[in-house]
Length: 473
Image 1 (spheres, rainbow, N blue to C red):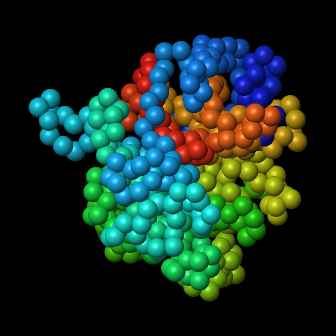
Image 2: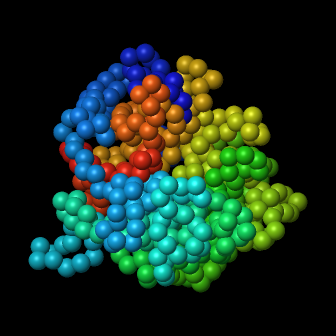
Image 3: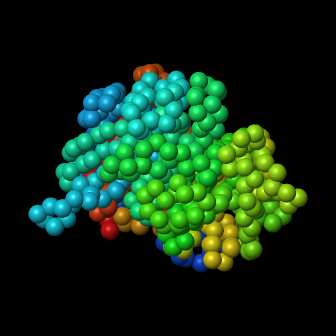
C-alpha cells in the first residue's frame, strides 16, 4: 500500500476520497449475512474523530506506538533481547500470532493467564534467528519458527521460549478448535537450496502450552507450497489453506480432508486428502469483478503430488478441465458456516487476467457455493496501487482490526460493520533515517480470550505490544 493510498485513508472524510467497498461489507464480520450486491460504501463525516472508532491518535512521547486517548500499551518483547527461557535472543521479524486462554486452576475459579504463539518470518539473512533447541528443531539451517509467551492477568511476561525452530519464512497460519496453532512456511525451497538440509513449504502444529507435545513434525499430507493462512471448519474438521504466490503461476485455494477430523492435538499427522478448488470455466478469479457473483457446484480436484517432489503443486496437471488460480491469496478465516479468503490484489503486469484492488470471497461448503463478497479500491484515482489488508482479526466492538503492509507510515486500522475505516494505532519506530524515515509494518493482530486486550506485532524491529483501553463490546 503506497503512502498516497495511506494518506487517502487517513483524510477520507475531509477530502471526500477513500476506499470504495462494493458488496456485502457487514457479512465480513457477522459471517451470516446474505451475499446480495450492494452500493459502493464511502466513509461518512466524522471518520476517525468519534463518529467511528476511538478518536484521533495521540503522539507517544516514547516514540513507539500512537494510540487514541484512554488506551495504553505495554511492550512485551523486543527482538534481540534475551528470551526468558535463556535459549538465546528474541528472534527477528515478528509476524502472525494467536492468543489462547490459560488452562490452570486458581483460587478465583478461573485462569486469566494468556498464551501467545508468535511467528517469525525469518530467511537465511536474518539478524536474529529462532534459536535451535533440541527436540523442537526441524532443519538446523532454518532460521524461522515460533516463540511462545505466557502472560499473567496484568500482561506481565511470565515466560518466553522457543516453540518450534528450524523452519523458514513463517508468515501466517491459524488456530485450531482444540487450541493449537498451525504455523505456515511461505517458502518451498528444497533440501540443498539456500543451505537448507530439508525440504520446506509445510505446515507445522504448535502447542501453545507445551511445545514439546507437538515437536517439529511437518504435516506433509497438507501439502508443500507457499503457504499463507488456514481456517478450520469447526463442524467437519476440514482445513482450508491459501497459497501466497505473487508471480505466475499464481496460487490455489485448497482444502485438506483429514483422516481423523477434529481429533485434537496431533491428529493431523494421521494424514488426509489434499484438494484444490476448481471453479468451472474460471481459470483465474481476477476476471470476476461484480460483488455478489455466485458460482454453484464448485469442484475440488485431488492434488496429484502434495509433496511437490518434481513440480510445484500449482503447476501440476489437474486434467483436461484445469484448475483455478488467483494472485496473492492471503487471509483466511472461518465465519458462521463459511470460510472467507482474500486475494490481496491482481495486476495484469504480473500476469493476471484482470486487475483488481482486492477481493474477499466466501465459500459455503454445504451448498458448494462460492461468492465474491467484497471488492474494494480507491475512489478518486484508479492508478493508486491499493491492496487488501494483511493480517486481520475480529474486534470486540464488531468489525475488524487490520494490519497495514506497505511504504510510508504504518497503521492498524479498524473497519466497522458499516464500512467506516478509522486509525487504531500508528507505529513510531523509525528504521530509516531522519531525512528518509521508514516504519516497520504491523502484523499478527489478535485479541485476548476476554476481548480486553489487543496484541499486535511490529515486524521490524520485532516488537510485541499489549494494548488495553475502553474497547467497545
